[in-house]
Each structure stands twice: as structure tokens, then as C-alpha cells.
Image (cartoon, rainbow, N blue to C red; front, side, top):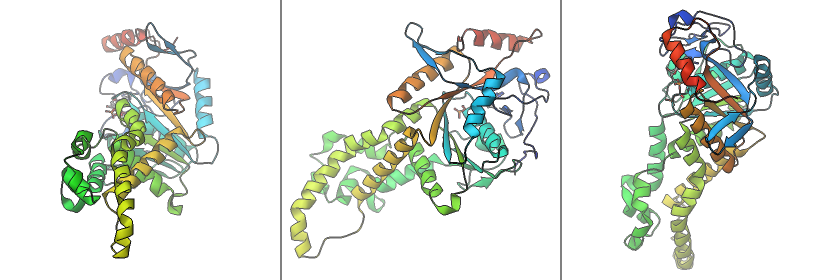
Length: 378
Ligand SMILES: Nc1ncnc2c1ncn2[C@@H]1O[C@H](COP(=O)(O)OP(=O)(O)OP(=O)(O)O)[C@@H](O)[C@H]1O
């Protein structure tokens, strides 16, 4: 079970630079910082402190980099968090960014911080490469809410298995345990049109679920159960999302489904309305949900997920990055794409910042040089 201490201040040694990772004071932005897999959540020293910055981005065309105009001082970072923690209305925080920058670590960290500030909190991982279990040193893989011990207010964690979500899509698109296009079309009463509709590439669509769909289904499941009175108590929901590409595809899913399956649904509607008069005379109008109904429901759920991402009142997408050239470039593209999708991004977490030091070990000196070249903050 959880290894959080009562105050959730946990310590561990760093796998990379032991001398630097002594237990130390809190960092104002996010309380605990690094996690050692399968051990404990930990505060690292100031070596790798994540800082929450308010995002004021300027896209530099020539260098195509994200320019954070003002770096938050520790005091400002506190006020950023104060804003995130204020109010009792439910808020969703979606943490996303390039693979490996520390999304899971920061999501877990933020969730503990919310709980320690009195918010009953749920942290959910929809990342196919789950590491939330490692962050909390608890097994969260059962698809159930697991209580995390330690914080002052209730904190629950949940990992959603993307494989299971994918199965849901398959079951919607494949009737009676069969596979492929023929089955799907049969399910809609259009089996005789399979040949003619080959050019719609339905086979590809149904056999290989579109990227991002698993995550979208996972998020929609969480939205669904959070609507029930049983889970009313949660006032902060933190999502540890999949790396950049998945998130963006997830947002375009409703359009994607509209464009591909929508055509079939329209065709089916036409045929159904032409034949319904005859069917009703013979009492054959069935109420059983078919493949089309299931897919239509799926599309509605995808729309709901996209709406949640775009809801400025209740949701905030927080980009997690590290100060390296590649991470900053990707964050810049993510920020621009999210803006295009009307997803509000106000804050950025810069993880693994290196504070000034006169006594660097060789490793830290290399890291510092690497980060200095990123020009992330100016
Ligand atoms: N501030 C930090 N200090 C030290 N180690 C860190 C820090 N942030 C993250 N790490 C380590 O970096 C690794 C990747 O972190 P994490 O799993 O949180 O990243 P992620 O962005 O969620 O990765 P993925 O995209 O693969 O899901 C982990 O081993 C984690 O312990």
C-alpha cells in the first residue's frame, strides 16, 4: 500500500546523483519532486525542482521555440498554486507533454498537494505506459480506485488499462463476436453493400482503432462515473495523460468519427427510413441497439471528452516540460495545437530545473549545459 508519510513529505536517494538528493526543504511550486520507481515518492533536493509558471508564450518563428517571458520566482510559483487550489468547485487538471518529461511524477505530486490542501482528489493515469503505481509504490492496475495513504484529505488513484478501452471499440464495431467490415455492415443491415463501400477504408478503421481512442474512452469512463452522486466528493481530478501525439489525436476524434463512420450512418439512415414503413407493418422494427447505435454513442462520448478539455470553467491543460531544446520545441508545438483546438493552457510545469551551483559533479555540469542551451526561459 501507500508509502506516503503522514505529511506526504517523502525522501529518497537519487539513482543518478546521490550527493544532491538529501532530504531538503519544500519547493514552492510542487511539493515533492522526484520518484524512484518501486520505492517511494520523494523530495529531491533543489537539483530537479519542478516550477509552475504561468504561460505567456511567444512563438519565435526563426527558432521555433517556446519563450517563457517571465520565469516565476518561488513566490510567484506559490501564487500559481494558490490559484489552482482555490475554490471548492470541481476542477480537472490535464497534465500532458512529451514522453518522459515527468508527467506522471508531476501529476502524482500535484494530486498529493491538492489533497494536503483539503481537496478530496482523484489522480487518473490514462497513459499506456503506466507509472503511477511506481510513483505511489502501490498497485493501481486493477482498474479500481485505490486509496493513497498519507495526505490530509482523501486521495484516490486509478490506472486505466488502454487495452480494455480498445476492446470496447472492437465490441462496438464487431457484432456477434465476428470481425471486420462485413460483420459491422451486417450489424447495420447493410451487409450487401460491403463491396461497394470498400473505398471508405472501413476495414482499416474498424480493425485498427484510431490513435487516441483508447485514452478518450478511458477519460470518458472517468467522466461518467464522476457524474454519479457517489463520487461527488472529488473536487480535484488530475489526469496523467499520454504523450503529446495521443492527446492531440484524441481531440480530433469526434471529427474523425464523423468523417468516416458518419458517412455509413447517414447511408444507413436513408435505407432505414425507406424500409421502415414496410417493416413496421410486419412488426419487425426492433429496438435492439446495433453497431451503428453503439458507434453513435461512442462518438457522443468522444464529443463529451473534447468538451471537457475545452471547458475553461472547469478544466485546465497543464503542459509539463523540461528545459531541453527538444522538450521545449515539442511543448511549443503542443501549445500551438491546443490553442487551435480551443483548449485553454494557462500554466506550464518546468520539471528538472537545475539551480545555480558552484560544486557540480560531472553529470550535473553536463545537464546544466544541456539545459542552458534550451533557451526555455528568458
Ligand atoms: N524532478 C525529477 N527528479 C528526478 N527524477 C525525475 C523527476 N521527474 C521525473 N523523474 C524520473 O524520470 C522518469 C520519467 O518520469 P515520469 O514517468 O514521471 O515521466 P512521464 O512523462 O510520465 O513518462 P511517460 O511519457 O513515459 O509516461 C521516472 O523515472 C521519474 O522517476
